[in-house]
Length: 250
Image (cartoon, rainbow, N blue to C red; front, side, top):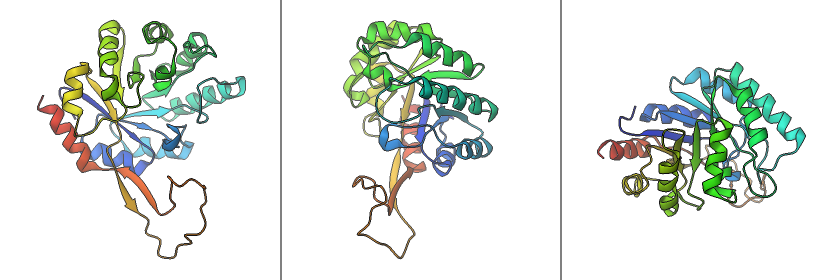
């Protein structure tokens, strides 16, 4: 485990979760659909992850990709998924809801925080799409969420370091600010010094080739060029170890 900082690894498989644990990560955020920014993983994946992990298990609760304005049906799905996470022994759930005007949906987020108890809640990067980050942070705190994941309303956290530092100061002891998005071994040290965060969220992945010998390269199951069938990304234990080592030297 890290000493000075908490490192959370975003993973989309039990294989990657176990690699993150072996590398010394403090916890994982378990998702499906990472190319969409993360969606809720399957029941079987959650169960298997809990069975194979001793570190913290945080699970994404997001019924689809796209925006964070959810219908009543989607809201009910989120509630049910949260209940399943509780039954599986998950430590924390991760979600975020917005209103059409870009403000934090305090009312419905608070309801889900209540369903999640005694699990902790991380309000995820839906925050980075909110209208006013200063008021948005106060709204997230009002929901009862224990933690906020943010990239500082930029595509990459290092680009949003100034805002993230302001959020750390604004939140004080009331909420944990965790930064995520574009953090790796090349910028982790400088970023945490500039932003003052004590928790970071990253993937630390590598690309591997499929073991398939016979391949039909003229057919694509998903039809998305960025998601080839015969290559995939998994957590790289060595990369994660190197980042943790860098942080432990600060």
